[in-house]
Image (cartoon, rainbow, N blue to C red; front, side, top):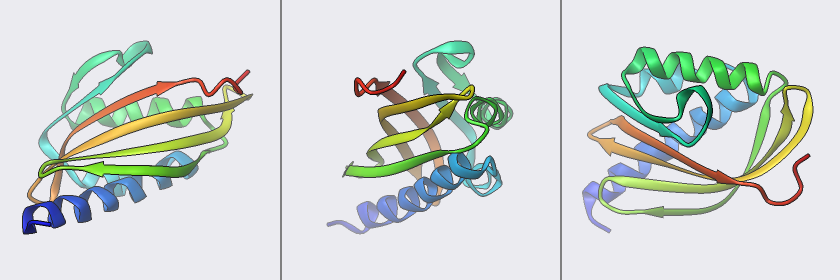
Length: 131
């Protein structure tokens, strides 16, 4: 694997660790510190549907996620796929969404530039077990 790919994986794995921690605890500062100044993210539904730009928008999004899953959301990593700039994490998650049982299958991708996350995209679909 090329040196650039190794760095991409290293940075993305660290970001995913901070992302998982944020979902479980509501503490997002470590992940936010990794975001580039021109960070963008794409989300499939709700008030953050579509393309979102900037760290301030990301901070508001992560706060919204913490409110949605106030008792934490817990992940089981299934697969990781990567190229020179992007790493995709496929996982299952479980917790309470607005106080109701929730399970899902999710894929998130992190775009890496140097030692920063410059882009994030999320895709999900029910695993048939959510209420």
